[in-house]
Length: 89
Image 1 (spheres, helix red, strand yellow):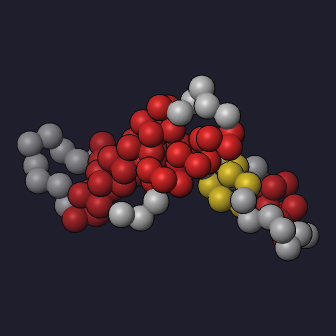
Image 2 (cartoon, helix red, strand yellow; image 1 turned 180 degrees about the horizontal axis):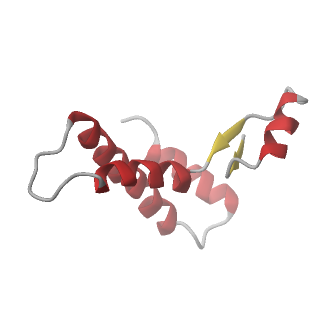
């Protein structure tokens, strides 16, 4: 799996390889959800779409928090801990 910012050449590489899957990065996804939440007017109830976006931002923030806990660990340890703490409950 290759996590990218959407740079097109990565997608070209994926199309030419059976071994690579491209996934977008959380920061770009989070930004779009955050924009939806920010569109809410102060004092008004969130729409269902805004509630979903707010939950997405919250969950992505939790991933960042967990990842930061292991930032000094080796890549192998980060992967192991990430799978343990971020997997389905």
